[in-house]
Length: 204
Image (cartoon, rainbow, N blue to C red; front, side, top):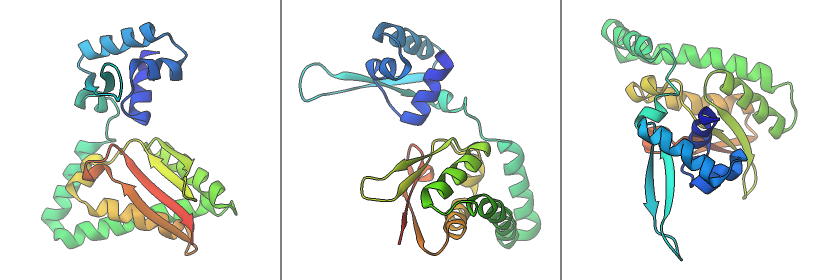
């Protein structure tokens, strides 16, 4: 149950103890007990926010150590490989490496998404693949039409921080995998102080 709480904060963002309790089927006291235990371990932190009426509300969120519990996959090895490629082949070599990864990803994503005719079906297939890759992806309806592809975690965050072209590459791959009749727009970006990466995807 305590680990479920961390997953909830990772995917939903800051929550009050009551909100967490409702989502987990616990009492407010039970949720607060778990939150305070994680706080003592420096895994979560809180911010008191003023409300329109009454006392400020306490919102709990993952600390840096809490986010680190959802680690980048092989981040140290990936960074070492990027450094070696740069030293041996320069930025052109890094671009070629990213392009090769782009081709492999595109082939895999197309293979799975082409099984479905609807955009909803394609996106659910894409989210499933991305989740298997460690992105904790999900699909939601967008209030202005289309869908949101939400990635709550970035398993290559260290590599993306070192080379922003990884992020450019993923945006292009999504666009190509879903086809010319679909528009893909990144509306929230982890690398630009976002809590996660979010893509607004709709038929053109």
